[in-house]
Length: 81
Length: 146
Image (cartoon, rainbow over all chains, first blue to last red; front, top):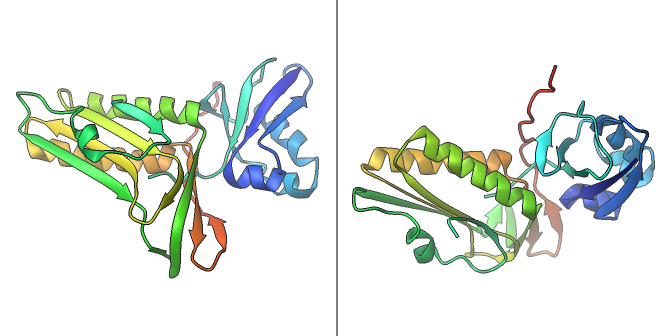
């Protein structure tokens, strides 16, 4: 299945891109998505394995199973205000 | 406009007009403003970035939670994104209530929740030309379903 991944702020700078399509086996979790991205090496490997994720614009645990077409974002520590 | 992420300059007076009621005797306005220094370094500007679609949803949730904790109060909240110079307003929170304690308390609590949970980041640009993403808060994530 194909997952649309969004990257912001520090993680986008590390990855050098704000958006990726990642191919994963059916039933893969958010944690597996993070690992797939980190295994690309270079700046990707500097994204922490426990990075916060949002699935379809809501914070979600890393154990969350993903579905084809989900919008997943890696959320660096937030600093609004 | 009661809850919004915007690229435009924030007009504090306009945010205040979104709260208030004939039975409300208190209105509190909080403004977050870009400061000229941080951790000993001279700041020229801050670039705010948001996951805009999600940030607007999260902000609406935080405002709804705050209003539910103190029934009867009214809240408006606007967060700006983009590059802001020193002195520009990044966040405006307005609260009105019957009496002042709940307006002060609700405004304070909402600002703290925004800092903990809103998917917004800031990159400080220093007067010496360097720039850096600020360390932030790891947002609370719901427990996995069992």
